[in-house]
Image 1 (cartoon, rainbow, N blue to C red):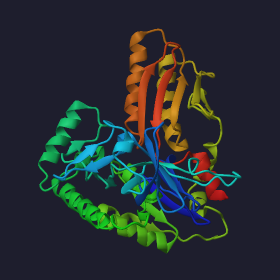
Image 2: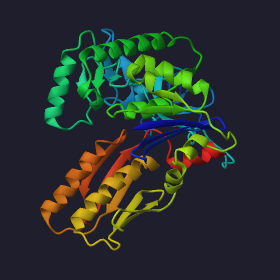
Image 3: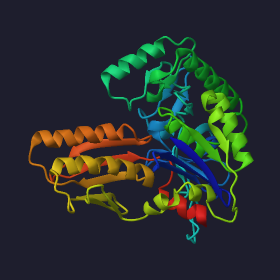
Length: 408
């Protein structure tokens, strides 16, 4: 896999390309006001009893919405208590200073004439985590565990054995990418994350709200998401980004330092020049079409609405069985959902299958595909009408929103 790092008017664009095919796209618009994963020293502004939630001031301009279940309070013995058992108003008070982490991003709506702080709020949590390449540090969790997204029992047992062999690590979540990583590397990364947390926590003091540390940028998200794959090249066109990526790799991915390659563009007037010379732009533009043509003339239609995303699988001229067409479509649907960064409810109308075993095969395949998504993609099975229901919790705004903001 190759990682391409490009820039356009201050916005960061990162493409993950495997076998000349676009497999990942991350964009950090210059106008982004809150990034997923950013940590703030915030102030409780208002308790909304009807929502059992609190609005918190993140930085004097942006607001966060903190739900009861995302509250974490430290006890006298140092352990943390989760919210959800009592009303949020009994745990937090207006004016109270708390540390929170953004669980979504915020892009300003340049077309809006009036914006309230409810409109501008992002989802936040007091259950803070720090992302490494193979580990996630959850400082408010005392035990170590395996990522819940790994469902294979044999793999979970193997990974837990690895985690138990690592000394001096507590509160870590092992990612699937750690399957072939040496114990010493995991211990090193765990200590790095622990040191980072201690430095961050030192800023949790005083009465001034503000950003403590930015969440992972587009490059870091891409490298983390593809940690289980072999990275051949990381191509970058600016020295500022080169140094930034080199510093991150020296800390979390020493094996990738030699893979970072500066690229000199012959024509600096071409927008997204690196994407252009690597033939990625057409793939990016294709993501804004409502349809995708499959290899054997079948197709899928993607329609986004305010309530949900509807995906329809069509045979076209494909003569194969419905199951074979559906299995091919399922792979492409997983890719499109990831690339377009679709979120919320996704309803898929596959070709009709009467056989129970065929339906089970399709659902099983979809679950395997969902496990490859860096975001939480859940397969809920077939509805009474024969539609497959999926839900996805994305980290950043939808691709269309990020694309529009990056080009404004």
